[in-house]
Length: 275
Image (cartoon, rainbow, N blue to C red; front, side, top):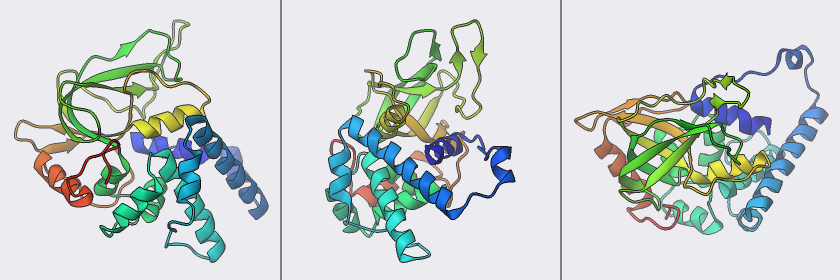
């Protein structure tokens, strides 16, 4: 669970750090092993709640993480990657299809969750990429997913995924009223300006996994967590407004994103926007 929380915080630009008391005592190899095992079990339980455990089981053995210090480390990292890929909506068939385009999803997932990914790999891991106009923050209603507010985005153009122009996607926020007269502010939430147009790299699957890890329920409306967001200028140039751990240059404009998506997905768009 800690690995998951760190990853989400990094995506939003808030630098999560290990608590001070943890730094005072170096964990033993055995305690690290036990924590890693507990972490995997929590994530597998979340997959089970989502009905995606079979996708994980079918993915085992279809690939492995190539960067590892030993055979046992490679096995553990590959199992982690299989869990993460299943959580993000991928299947064993997707692993094979992407391999045909010289893209190893196991390695991509490993880099992605290690925070050393590129914008292209973020788009590969996303199930939804859209150009959309931001609405006003919506808060004050009882939510069942654990978030406190959301921002609706009216889609102008869909670049990947099942959404189409005219649809609305909702980006949840951890900031919002707590119900006791106070307000929580989470600096990892990306700041959007109502009325402005953005290119959003999103994952509905990651939202569902994150909510399942918290043992909450997903909202009925199409809700997705952002990996990265860019403001779209009048000439279609892109300005990053989110901060992430990444490797590689940001795309310059909308056209370059469309070309890159076509390159990595061959222009095909199925139910999840994958090959």
